[in-house]
Length: 327
Image (cartoon, rainbow, N blue to C red; front, side):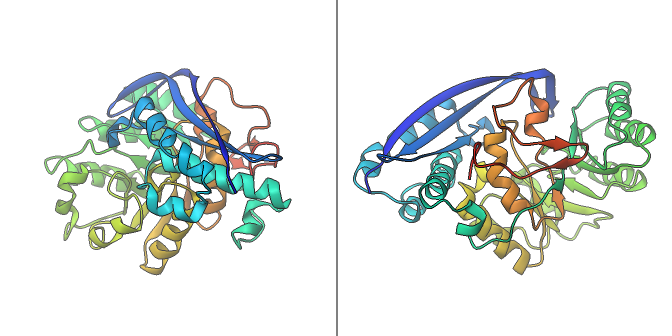
């Protein structure tokens, strides 16, 4: 059936600022794609990420290029082959799922053959900063069940000690965002292990992660920038114990669900993460996250405000979306 495409770019302010090893930001740009027939419409949101060569302009152009095929009957199945895994495909793929749910009156989880989703414990991110600043942020969030700590290379042992001291009872996971090197890898992993960290994301650059093979891992190491879709999995074996599934990397819910199946079959621990974005980005990821060991879907909590009908966050829990938002 021919579909009409509507595109919007939106800028959402961050609450304060948000810093990782690559820099800090005070606002986030998202692209929203809406697919409509004569009666129903569905939405999907994506976040262009410069780490993968994406910009708002490139993502918009990639989606615009599908306007003609959509008018000629392009469907979600064909989308998987005509577009590469990317943020652009994610927006369209999730819009297809939402549209199908609106057309059929069935929730996406039922359409995908998944069980009824429930609330999940999600991480809350502690932004990169000085040990004192990170300790203060962790103290404010000490009652949370799970904290994700952004690290940045030199000085990380002091940072993780400060966070653990301020939040003695929280489970801690760490995201180095490719900022470590062979020089400090052992010391940083040892510091994390001593602090009781249960998982470290992407310690080394993707281009240098062969060094992880054969290197003793005192705690689980998770591929993020090194893991995109199912084609990534072959090169991860022996280097990582876990994979971080993000819909913007995988190119949508369709591939993310298949990646979760294949990753689990190969013995990888599953983590489901997000870019900083609104609840419209988080909603489909909640479905994938139902089977994940680690859930990091706190994107809307980093923003100064969220969309109407946004996800409900209750203490450490995130609840599934309502149909007014998505699915």
